[in-house]
View 1 (tube, one colour):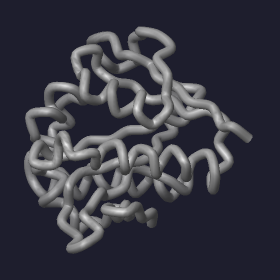
View 2 (cartoon, rainbow, N blue to C red; view 1 turned 90 degrees about the horizontal axis):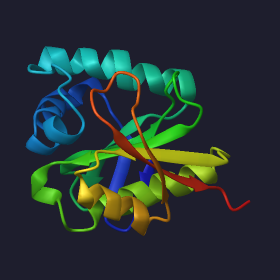
View 3 (spheres, rainbow, N blue to C red; view 1 turned 90 degrees about the vertical axis):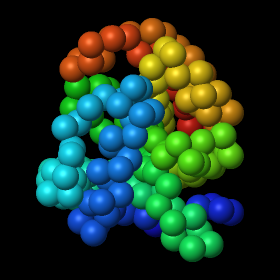
Length: 169
């Protein structure tokens, strides 16, 4: 579990299924990340079990619940992902629309970037975003990531922008 001034970033549990349905069907998720076919709480539990929790068990890190530190209100997800098809670990995040524009994505992403370089000892972390997602580009730049290239990631129908940061140690 990670904590920031305003946020708690904790591992997901199967009890988070209703929130996952809401997040994965939000307009921003569908537009910029893609439809994962998660429509019911059963779908969400399968998604959590097979993707998020399995990733955590295999790699020791995964996407985590982003919640308000003050009262535990779920806001989104953020974390690191090791994709078999990519050489670097990547940073991913998404918040429900009610939490956009308040610095929460930047705060969560910065915490995971620091954790990746510090506790996990990663040397390089990348992030991908849709070219039309200007807000995400601003978040990545604000936490010190720099644009490297436009590319097509296996399994996606359109190009993404690749941002990267390297450990200073």
